[in-house]
Image (cartoon, rainbow, N blue to C red; front, side, top):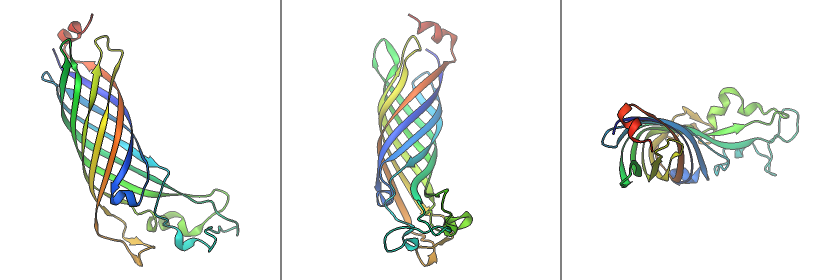
Length: 226
């Protein structure tokens, strides 16, 4: 059996933990990766994804709101500014595939460790009908709580590479831990100075991926045919 290059597109859903649960709700992850699967089923690769969500628990615009909870735009009308979660992660991967079936050594238990970089922030989505000068251009940086730092992740699940090459996927559980800090020089909500405290951001979720395999060995490509 020979080596294979695996290109995957994946989608995940996760609940936040640690300091991250105080800022965001349900989290979604859309990503891609490229891996080398060796002769002995070792996995080496690179991957990454974009993080997004619609639930922000910190109201970073509270100092701009009226007693009724509204924000007034430059046209003296209510401005419908919404808060979103946005972010990304990139990591290197190392892992092992443990076959569960005798007749298919490229399908089985998938164990992967990732190490890399994670970033997240609060996106201020403007109202196109009511302009709010206080959150334009560089002023946004004083509200978005941009945070990033080193991360590790652990994945355990099932991977399937079919012998006819038509059905190739993986699915399982992923845990992520990141040590991050606020990277802005100023914060309008904390007296002007940005917090320098370290954060522990956690994600607990489920991820599935579709795999496009490229088999390097001609011998292996011939052996996997029915």
